[in-house]
Amino acid sequence: MSKSPLLSLKGICKQYPAVLANDHIALDVLPGQIHAILGENGAGKSTLMKIIYGAVQPDAGRILFEGQPVHIRSPQQARALGISMVFQHFSLFDSLSVAQNVWLGLDKTLSLAEVTQRIRDKAALYGLDIEAERPVHTLSVGEMQRVEIIRALLCEPRLLILDEPTSVLTPQAVDKLFAVLRQLVVQGCSILYISHKLHEIRALCTHCTVLRGGRVSGTCIPSEETNASLSQMMIGSKPTSLVHHSRQAGEVVLAVSQLSLPRLDPFGMNLQALDLQVRQGEIVGIAGVSGNGQRELLFALSGEDTRAKADSIRMGGQAVGRLGPAQRRALGLHFVPDERLGRGAVPGLSLAHNLLLTRDEAVGSSGWIDMGALKAQAQTIIERFQVKAGGPQALAQSLSGGNLQKFIVGREVDAAPKLLIVSQPTWGVDVGATAQIRAALLALRDAGCALLVVSEELDELFELCDRLHVMAQGRLSPSLSRADASVAQIGSWMSGLWDTVQESAH
Image (cartoon, rainbow, N blue to C red; front, side, top):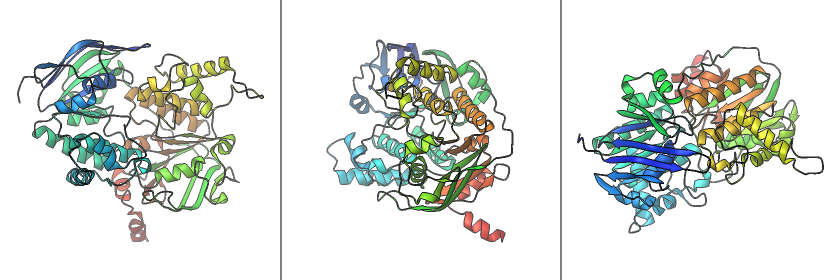
């Protein structure tokens, strides 16, 4: 391995109106190195990566690539140098197909048919299951992640930047991705790797730079650290350990009975005779690889899809299958979608105004909004959930992914719902905020709320849930108590194998 850095950053600064995102950052990445960038939400990691990729321009500092000073003015110029990036928030056009989206970022001498074949070849080579002809709007979050990774790999990068690449991947898919990344390193590629999963960084990365408050606070060799010591470097303290008390569940709040729905689009998943119950004071989890019907189920439960038979979904005994989101909210159902920007929050609206998506306490009987009350309500959530933002007037798009997630979860938890449905509650969230969100969900459960959590993080489901289901091919497994479930069993059930297990038991 050459000791001359592939990439050098010297004194990089970036000031936004409300925050100094990068404060004189210095960083070297060597050839063939998997270099982790670690820091809590809002530490300046994503801004720094966007500067390297040319998506954001620094206010001060220098970038050297292969020893030569470069001014990277655009992502196109970065790709020409051999720098590719997979963003945490995807940059895909919903109305175009997977292949068309990938084609946009590639050399136009290639035909769409050639790009389509290259996607298939890369997907097969790296075990990234994706259909090139599918429209992006039909993809789950996990499938969109795969598209972004394949798009980056097609550029044959010298430096690959990955921002939370495993946040929506199953453990098996993570293992495949790590094999891909190690192979890339053997071929001479360097990797900048952002993740909040400390065990991944320790297993994969050969070097680590820690950011805190926009500054480099330390460097280390991850394999020589523990999760606790990395957490200490990152947030200045160890994350709060959660205590999961078993408790007696109460009355049934949500009852799904023989719910079957044909898919709305050609690439969706048919829901097949789903049975599900969630009771007061319990958290029920749904595990599974994205794209197996979770999206369709969540649409049916939230009221975005009202095609179900009225009595196939009941809340507190009342048939709600044909009711819309506002009507279900009036009955006490609140929902946190997996897509933060666009569904969970309107990017160009302030945090205060984003409250109005699901909360109406600041709206008077005549329809006028009491802005003072609305801002105070937003400020309460910001303080309670320790959201790093420039106050209630800060735009949703100005927050880091983890801080926006804390605000959205806080908005729904603060409503004191009878039933809370949460999809991917801690996707892309640092260890401190993850512990905080999970603690809030457990506290809500202990207060008597019924919670349904859909997550691809098995560790999260085992930490939070009282009972677990697995979703595969539009079907839902029987429930397993937390005590009876194992990672191995849940992993095998992700292939839809629970029928054979049950038959052999009889």
